[in-house]
Amino acid sequence: EAFTRIFEGVPRCEGPVLTFSGMWLVAITVILLRFLNYDYFGLLMSVKQTVTKTRPLFQKGIAVSVTLGFQSGTFMFMQLVMLMFSRALSLLFGVTVYPVEATDGWNCPYEGETMSILIGRLFLLIMGAMAMLVTFLCANGHFLGRVPIVGGFGKQCRLDLSGLDPDADTEDAGKLMRWEATLSMFPATLGLWFDSWNVRGYLIEERAHVYADQLRYPTECKVCGTRHIPYEDVIRATGMQISLAWQLFPFIGPLLGKLAEHTNNPPLFYRGTRLKCIWPTSSIRLISEQKGRKMDGGSTVKYYCVLLLAYAKDRGIPILQRAVRLGIYFAIVYFTYTID
Image 1: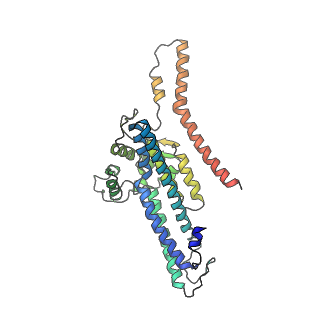
Image 2: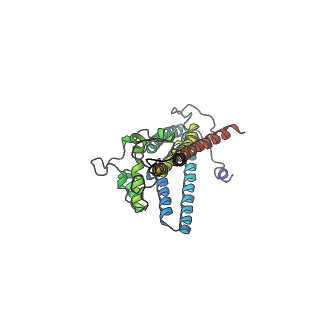
Image 3: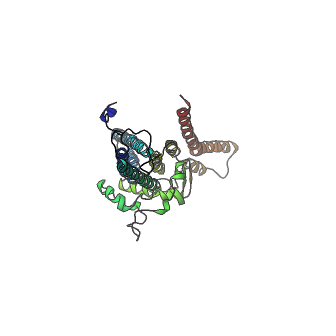
């Protein structure tokens, strides 16, 4: 009601409204460029993991609560930004560049606004096309990790993020785009991760190692023997960024956005060798090492029972967890669109 009163009495002229909507698209696109390329969610999750491993219980509780609160607030704010983006973008439907052709819904009291309508329509069409193109490129990770883009942000945070750029020490160091990330968001939306495609495109391994090094993450992985932020957290942060990018598309965007969140928390499927500990089998390996060459009947039964429990822990529980996340997503979609 207060928002409505602010604009009460303002003439509903098509030209100024479309021009103002185009300006909104420019401003929101600049915000998206920062959030999609600076990897705020990945850094926040890395901070949470580092604090969990390095602080005493009370400090850890306070710091994790603050980090999660800030992350949730940021995500909600960005969803509001995407809502404004999609509302401004929705004006593109039905817009024509022919200024004499009238459109419904406008009630402008002034005459001779032909040039204003033409400028507004052209400006909105051009800005809308550029905003969608830039957002699509950012969502696929084409600018992710590039030193010319994240270098200044890293200095502000006192972090050296040059390790994210695989071409930092080559002749391609000054380039803004990485073409190996082409269409990475499509398998990632479904929770499918491949070494040669979206794992490489979104720099999952590089981000996990660089953030661990810069934030002084102390724990060494028992599987791969290196210090890195858990890959599942980096993928979860990537899923949140992809979710925001999808929400700018009307109708199907929110469905795909929420799908990207649920299928990457944790990721549904991974194929490759770069992320060795994304499917940990520590319990299976520990039990398998205890198998003796000669065991009597009772020891054999006991061994295989324990081995079965190890498989349930390392394989069964992760599969059940992923099935529950998918079930929650489909339940949300069902009740959202079927309950009056």
